[in-house]
Image (cartoon, rainbow, N blue to C red; front, side, top):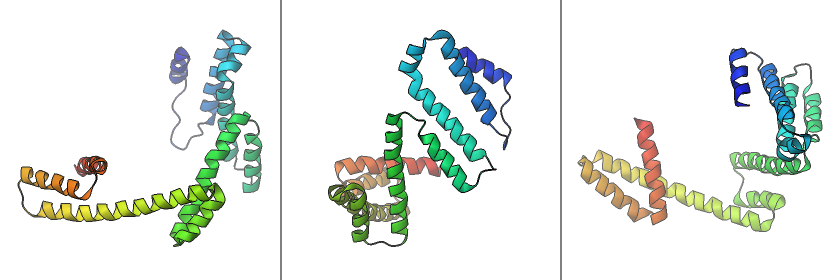
Length: 203
């Protein structure tokens, strides 16, 4: 397979921007499948690669459907749904769970953008995941709000320290004291990491 990748790379020019990449992807996939067939028995292929190959074929077929400009949107969705049935049952169930959470996240963002109340969010989550999970998510929301407030206060105090004209050692000492004053030990490590990222991005 390593030799095959080199051969494909040497014999196939890289697609130009905007150029259809599906033929190259299809060629590569079929070459890999054929190579496995040359060296491995059908039993071994099914045991180790059947799920991977099913997902690969599904992914490529999905790309072909999405790239087909002759299809209407409803026809495209119908074909994509039909392709889901070609996946192994375990993969289908995993995808259903993933899509469920993705759809839930989109709907929650829509509700928040429309200024939904905490009660409305709780009601939606309870319908999707049950009352217990909705309660835990509400607690998480509260913690996020508290964290955001603490970070806003911290950033304001940090800026005051920067503007105070302290020497670098004194500034760092005061900054660490500010962290320890406002955050738990675990939170201090998180704030230090965020400060480090911000400093690198500012350079």
